Image (cartoon, rainbow, N blue to C red; front, side):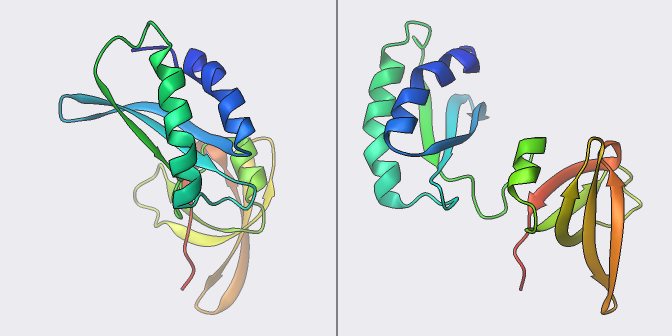
Length: 153
């Protein structure tokens, strides 16, 4: 498959022109079909239908110019979603004070949901409640399988 870095370089000027931010760019499969997934958001971390519609044609035309994309694939442009996974330290820093869900590599430990208070070199600090009592915990990144934004009900 085509190098994502090359695709990113081709698309970045278009994304900036539309005042959007690239959140994620990845190849996936749906059955035997290759899918290029492009997740975008605006400054308030959303993407509405009009924005997605306006950028789809320019992105599609730019991708058609890449000789390496000489195979059939689906183009999926959308928002990263409400409960998107936070994969990088930058993602985490951008979501300080947000409500998140932490899944652990140790499957005997239950997932926890709470407010992200701090991002450190090799850990995060989370505030959450157990039986109505507040608790703060520093969690090593090596012990975390995934972190995603959580919806608080």
